[in-house]
Length: 309
Image 1 (cartoon, helix red, strand yellow):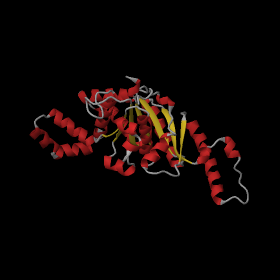
Image 2: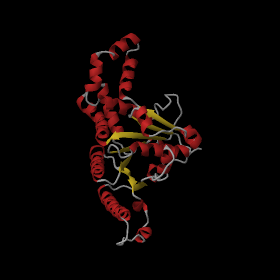
Image 3: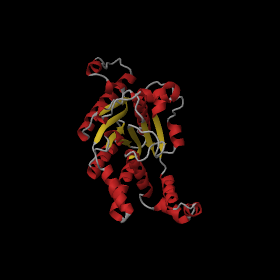
Image 4: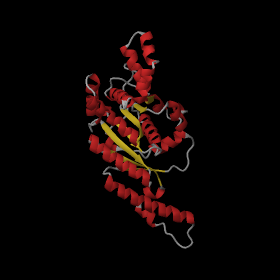
């Protein structure tokens, strides 16, 4: 597989900023001239509420030409499978509107996740692109993954189809399992703030990724950290707490010391480069926020070629 076709998976606990990191990373590389596709299973309106790309053509004209956000709805993928296998429209519509099909889609364990993975693999292997089979090529594919439990369940769906079924779906599951268990194909960016629950879930997720799929964390994105975590040792030594220090300064220093301790503990649990992203204090619109976050996302282990802008 072409090394530029790797999937960069942005994963972690729900609410830790995966979508913001995915869009910021995509915007950064698209603005440097690389064609980027961001894939999400979140509904597009939900993405629009979370982060808006309005005005990108004016603020980041290079990124506007190179950045594509794709929503893969598993239900729509299954409907497409029916239409492809039953070319007679009347027959296909009858199946799609039947209670049997609707119940199968909602009840069959892992079915939606299975077809989502299948389409994601197609994108990664350049069998299809954001604009369709004849669309433009791209250099970076980012998967804005769901919360860690759902993310792991999605990856396991291929293995379940291989194990419990026979015939074409089992063969397809075996091939997908091989693809998503190959570290040459996947780069894992785990996102976590330095909070106890998020850290614990991140460690559990990365352990499961290695035990089940032999996938290691490529980099750990420490999101929304305090300024003291990114400050140099020289700068932190100049900060002294005295009896006259304000409660705000005391809190900031205590918080910074706690985050440094937790980051060190994380380095023991997850052996991967740590990329701190500070909590952004001021920004003028979502694009400005994404631009500021993106400046911190310098991840050399992605091994991307120079942009073409």
